[in-house]
Image (tube, rainbow, N blue to C red; front, side):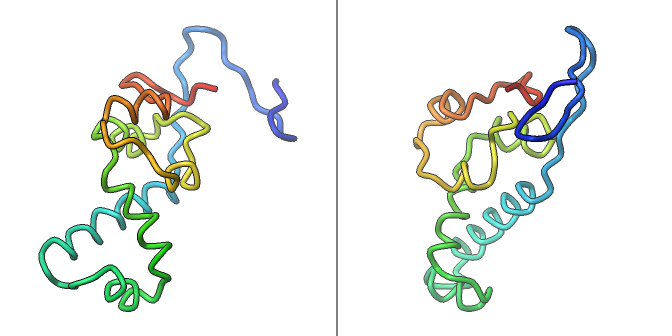
Length: 118
């Protein structure tokens, strides 16, 4: 048992299969970002402000969340599979990220085999 942030977690021995950490909030945000991007690209909405009004949310929130549509495919796949690092939260992803996918993966500490590292 290991204490992390006021809660106890079980630490598995080296080589033990790790549990996936499906973050439904993060998955939902990624899905929304891609949906919103598609709506803008297809011309269903002319501006972000128009789309935000239709969705009933603030334009800055929509803009920050839409950044998720620019994530590297490996990062999106890790999130969908529950293999993202523990520190990779929705708030962390709403911050400005590099455009280059390799730089994103380095900054976010995500690689293809990543499963919830510290």
